[in-house]
Length: 258
Length: 288
Image (tube, rainbow over all chains, first blue to last red; front, side):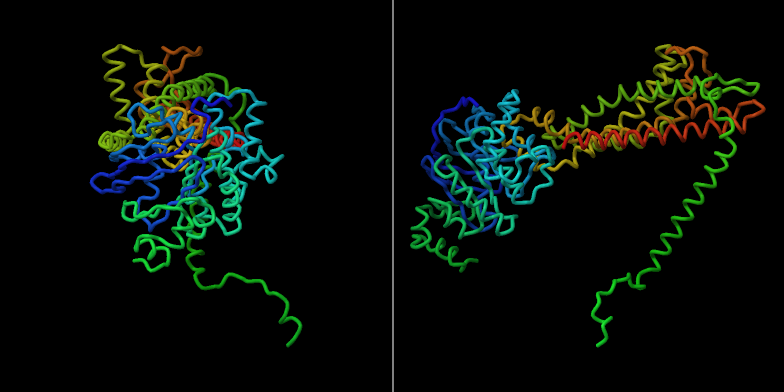
């Protein structure tokens, strides 16, 4: 599939980002940078703005009514918050995986082929190749080969989540946003997804929101700790978990948090 | 300990809480009996008359006629009014559900729809009489009947389609949009393919409802039929014919004809519901 945006894995630069839902602030003056090919894990208590941050990066935030944003967000060559940004191309470059596996009520094949078809891929040989490649990349191919015409609903929860990852990969994104991708899965399926994330590392710049601190420690290069819409601390994963600079971070990591 | 103590036992429902079950079952049986007490005499009286002659010949005031033109009128009027009102309803429902940025508009729309839905069909019939027949000089005919049926069906179809679309989880729309699909692409590639099966099944309901419509058709489509079909010719339907036989008809075999006509109407409705359900199932499976 030809890519119209830049071929390289992009970096992400967020400058003075604030978001409000109506009058309620959700993010306040967030500044952070992610270099190309790195995995950033975002941790923090519920309602701290993690998901909001993620949804700004591909502008899915605009689906909510009454949202106001301020600041600049750059993903590769996309100036995300610009009024004239090509949202279609942006979202094609920035794939997203959700907390609950949400495959479409179609066949496994049609699920993965949905994105490429949207972008005009018609030839069935090309589609088959893309679907196979994406499923392989998502480590699902061996389990579903020969069953591509079955409904996606016949898969287990973990398989469905990997199918959603394959669906996101099929349009050839450069960035992956993962919103608590293992939160609704059993430990074995969660471990598989984690393994997959590590495998995809360096090919994609990734941002993963997670409630699972061990998971953050295992998969990420960088960790950002959010609290009440503010970025409290961000740093190298190892440093963050061994020697956090901020007291709040330490309290959160050690479970002494209220 | 004896051997039988070790073998697994079957768990039977405990007697506690069974009385409500018996009451419900009793009510159910009573309802079935009430229904059968209507349908069975109808079948006994009507079945002997149900032959090819009855199904295809025009009615005769002196007895011995059929309901051929009425069946044709019913099928054409209901079919065409669906062709007109269903697409309009789907478009409106899509606008209501998929483009609901303007909250106030959506609220007004829902209120308005409730009001239109609660209008008796008779009122819609009178409006058509006043506008189409009196002012535009349309004849009392098939075409006026189609207009009435379309107007009756439209809000109902909108209501049902809105329900279908609202039942589609937002997660799917979200996934589609996050892949870069536009709102329109999401509607055409995801929402409609997913919704078709349910829309078809519910359309069966609306077709059955139109088939039974009488009040609004009596003074718009009329109580007569012609031997050859025409849009400008009077278009009595099966249901209206039934009403006519029972109130004004003078044929000596009125009881029999009425029973047979009722039976035909019943069979038509059953057929429509059955076909729409099967078709919906087929569409659903075709998606998978």
